[in-house]
Length: 204
Image (cartoon, rainbow, N blue to C red; front, side, top):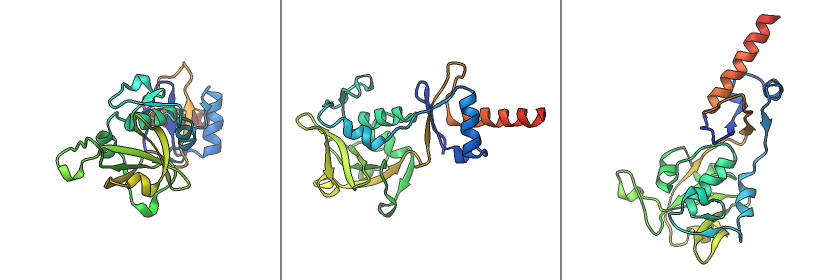
């Protein structure tokens, strides 16, 4: 799974690089990359009672002011994973997950107040929330309630669940990129690693 970087942060699954995680982390540390642990669910919970809800708000206002999809976009930006802004864009974007496979950090997309769709109106989405390990949902739900955590049943009450999406693997690491590198995609980091390994092998 490839990730598009956000600023100086980039998510990467080191198991996809062809280099062992231990070796990869050693090389990246030598090159000035820093590992930054990011817990999407914990970040989302920290916004409960803190973020103000405003539909259609600019992403630049996050995390102080959010709607459901800008909260999700901001959360994943902290993990170094770029996501599109709108619910429908996010819904069409990543890996689809069945209910039996759901895990913390996945996103549940439902019908909402204003549904958007690509071609099929029956597949429209208008709301999204973050799944926790306790099977609750953290979501930005309305101007009078802000960000809150609800049980799955309450989250889905009055809303048709359209799908569950996964934007990153559990093994994904977040790297802080040094100023000496320009990283656009996690694949860029993979090739930095492979180049370093190749040069090291030649020198021996």
